[in-house]
Image (cartoon, rainbow, N blue to C red; front, side, top):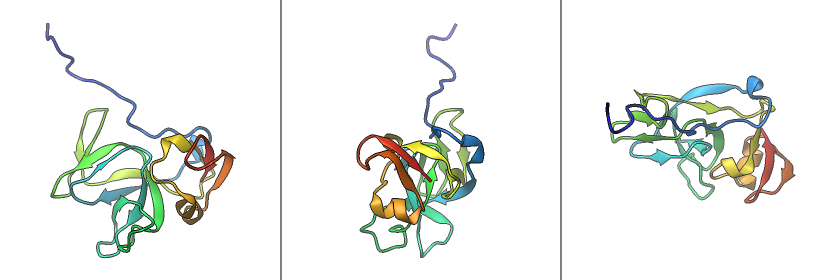
Length: 139
């Protein structure tokens, strides 16, 4: 019998608080050499349409506009191959991201990079609590 587990499972997936069945997703390619947590707010890089990196309001490469939210934690290599954490650790070219305006609620604490500018760009609203703390947002 092996001393270590052959397969392990973890909660490296963003889970909606309610209205999960209404959630709309799209598959997105990610930039090279990244490590991203589930729930990371993503922006699209203008120079490479269809490629997303972590949103930051101070950027000037297109990723300063929040577009979607990453569903699974993952890492990318220098060639853009994406390895999804958890499940089976498969390597893919695109991963699912939640689209805004679905009416889906998330815990603020589960979202990385969400600020007032991103909330506005995503068309979301705070249902309870406050950004940077605890509470719920509806996107």
